Length: 630
Image 1 (cartoon, rainbow, N blue to C red):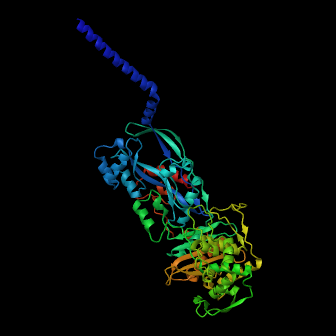
Image 2 (cartoon, one colour; image 1 turned 30 degrees about the vertical axis):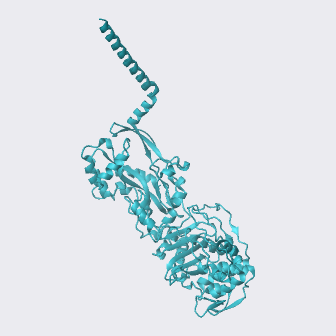
């Protein structure tokens, strides 16, 4: 009997302890962990989805759109709704390997978010997928608004591209309001003006079941479209240069010398920014990066070249201002110039005869400038080169920028630990030896000469509104009006006098002033870096240009000056109403994105075969695209 009572006590104690543990656990779950558990429960019932904001549209100065937004159709899957055998069939439907699909689903394990399997579906793929959605309830077609770089590589080095925000960028406070997975500017104007262009993302809250299937929309905060951007770029000027330039490697840049607005900006070879829209593959990126022609290099301001005879503008100014050469001085050019045991040659075999400085500029006489440089001295030449911005970065804000090089005696002593020799001066006087410049610097230089020595320290990518001034005030270069007028007269003669080196590029529409230049490349032979810098109209410049064609078989007069002429004439024709804004884009095939043009292409008359009445995804896209392209 006592044994039974003992067993009963033990059983009661065990039951009591079990009840106490249950009570404690219940209290822990309800009181201590209750808030966390409720949050987890809510997370199982509701899903917050970010709505990416359409980026602002980029226009040229006359309102011609250069970059728009277009719908992109993506396919995603809710893993919890997959049935046995679905994975293999879905992989085949999307032309993906089952291993890749499994990997994407595995990486998203534990999330109720649908997993994106394929982005940027073409119309045929979209039609095929939507015809099978009833067979695969786990699949859904999503619509996203993406960038459409309508004219592919036209001005792409300037416009740039966007890409998904990186892990490093997400740590940057600048991107604190950007959701994971959204695209931001990674290059060019898209990067420089990203904050303005990207807008503010929205969000919608959706109720879902245990498998992730959407039940209903609970609430939504709509996104705010980014602000549009009007560039100073004139796409007709741009296209005239691009068409004439052809397949050369090199650069073209045009500015308004009165305001510093950038009217044209071309680096060749270039790239198609549409390749970056849905993320560029490692193979394609490697191809771009390893390309020996360096299409990702912006030659306008990242490459530096010997300026050749275009540098004679500086040598002439320095010689005149220092008094080393007077306007009436004449020098005999027999075609050669001897300095010690070395003989320097003129480009014209037999020479130019007796010639003064004005005609030495017009005919680009090397021998005259060998003498002028020696009389002036490299330090004086360097002083005026720097006064016109050579050897200094323009500070565009687009990333790495080359500064060029203006050598002098102190520089050589510091770098090479040796003296500057007269032969160095002879070569530097005609833009060879150590002298290096960027095309952007040369456009600003020649524009400053054209405006009478008014130097623009600041250049603008965006169109300045009436009454709006550049960020930095123009600076007057300290040179006499006599010197600047003589040089301007000579530059006009380069293009408009029969013995001028650019006479073949004279225009019947406007008087162009300029200077040709040809620098032999490092590897020698008959390959040249061919230059032309100039402005128009000659008496009151509105456009200044620099053209640099790399390693050509032709000299500056043939390879570069005609490009400048066509660009300047496009500007004049447009100004006079003889060329409609954007007219030179005609004939350029738009990008091959899914839905080029307007929203009408998505639900209206341009519907592709196979989509009988316009798919649900297409209809959802229509309103968004119309709004995005305002």
